[in-house]
Length: 413
Image (cartoon, rainbow, N blue to C red; front, side):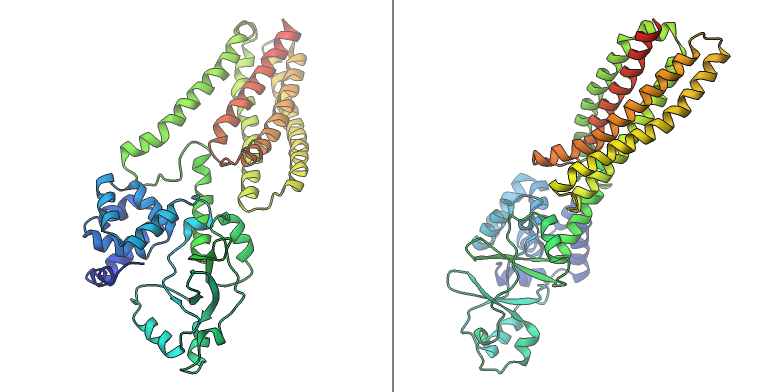
C-alpha cells in the first residue's frame, strides 16, 4: 500500500491525464502510456501504478528502461515493492496477474463509526466495492458490503454483520477458469486468497473479462507469429524483433516443402499440367486445416473443450475433411480431366483420379491436424495459438503436394 505522499502527488496531475494514461494501459498501448507516465516524478508514477492491476504493473515494469525501473522500485514503499514483486511471480494468464492491492481492510472488532471514518480518508481515486475483514495474520474473516455498513448502528462491530463465507479466488487459478466460475455470480469484485486463507489482493471481474477479450483478440496474430505484446503503436525496431524470428522459422519450413516438390522435378517436367494444381491443392488443404484450427482454439479458449469432448471433435473433423475433400476433389478432378483432354494428354482420366485422391487425403490430414495441433500444445502447457498456422501450413503443403506428385510418379511414370 502506498503512502499518503503518493496520494497527494497524484492529485497534482489533472484527472483527465491520469485517466488517459490508464486508458492506454487498458487498451494495451503500453508504449504510449509509459511515455506519458515517465514525464512525471517517481512518486507520481508509483501512485499511478498503485491504481493499476498487476497485469498492467507487470507490462509496465517489463517495458520500462532498467535504470528508471530501479529508481521507481527504490522510491516505492517497502510494502508496495514487496507486493509488486509478489504479483510479478504469478503466471501472466492467472488470476494473480489481474490482482490489485486490497486497500480497504479492517479488523473484526472495529466499529461502524471507525470504519466510515477510515473510508473517508481513502483517496477518492481508489476504486473499491467491498471492505475486507482480516485477522492479525492477514487471513480473510469476512467481507463488508458498503450498504450493510451504512444501515448498521454506529457502535456495531464489523464482525456482527460481515459476510463470513465469501466467494474467493486463488491467485494460481487460470483467468479462463476463473471466468467460468464467476460468470453467473454478477459480483463486481472478488477477494484473492492463498490456500491457507491469507488475503493477497482483490480482482475485479471486469479486469478478468477484459484480459480474456484481449487474449482472444490476439490469437489471430499468434497463429502467424505476431506476439500479443505488439500493437499498432509498437516502435518499428521492436516490431521487427517480435516478427522476424517467426519469419525465419517460416522460411525454413517453406524450404522443406519446396524440397519435397524438388524431389519430383522430373515428374513436373513430364506432366507440366501438375504444376497448375500445386497451389490449388495446397490452398484448399490449408484452408481446411485453418477452419479446423480456428474452431478448436476458440473452444479451448472458452473452456468448452474438455478432455471427454476432444475425441468427438477429432472424429467430426475427420468426417468433415472426408466430405469436403470428396466434393472439392471431385470438382478438381473434373477440371483436371478436361484440361488434360484439351492438351490431348492420354492420361487425362488417371490425372483426374490422382487429383481426386490427393485432394481427399489432403483435406482429411489437414482437418485432423488443425484440431490435434492446438490440443497437443495445450496438453504440453503451451499456448495453443502460438504460431500453429506456420506449422499447419507446412504439414498440409508437404502432404498435399508430396502426395499428388508421388501418385503421379507412381502411376504415370
